[in-house]
Length: 330
Image (tube, rainbow, N blue to C red; front, side, top):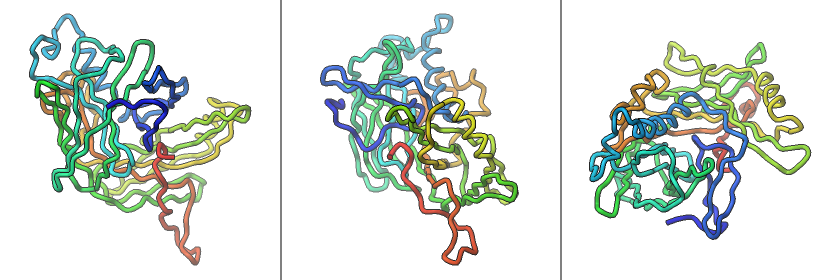
């Protein structure tokens, strides 16, 4: 199923996609990247490069990639992305294995389903065509199926001849809402407790042009500002003045209309991609949890908090603020 006309789903994919504008070609809706870009964390970028590395390896003439050979039944699809229990829409990039990094806009032979392994609830994902440059397209499948922490899900892509690629993804346990405060020297501090692995922290700025109605959402990575305490908890310290000065340089004549902090955690089974050589994860069997395919699909749980400090009723204690919708749901 392709999206058509001007219908929109509740939210667009979060990573690794750039700030988007939409255009239409006939009755087919194509998502095309705009000139502005998200500022990705190293983990997010590395996840994206897994797919790129696999495809580049597939096109190498020195060592032919088995998946590109006729009648290949070992590598059927590449599957890349993550399932986030906090998101209203799940997006997964699924493409047939091929011998080139480039792909045209033609439909692909794939039926994609997502099954809750505890309840048996199953959703069929819709197909969506994205354009990333001249003659460069990818298929991103989406569903609004509700996901829950601590549950496992089976994602399956099936070809019309019955061959499949699949991956089982477990969403991490819920965790306390992170606490935001300002320390004595004016640094912003975010405290995160009772999690397995912190995989992403970004400050999120909505900026609006003072000369037009153009709006952009800018993500600034903060994972390098993270400390793991002796207790096992995490603490992120950053200077908001530096962030906003850099934004003003990159986006002159704009006003910051909203600020958020996005935090994502995963289970211990998710690899630390930043510590893995690109020569390893570029190999088909290097870093992958996809059966009969390549790529990686992670299970995460994200929380988005406002860029402010909240207090109890007597203003004597800092407390977690109420959660906000993820930035791409706004």
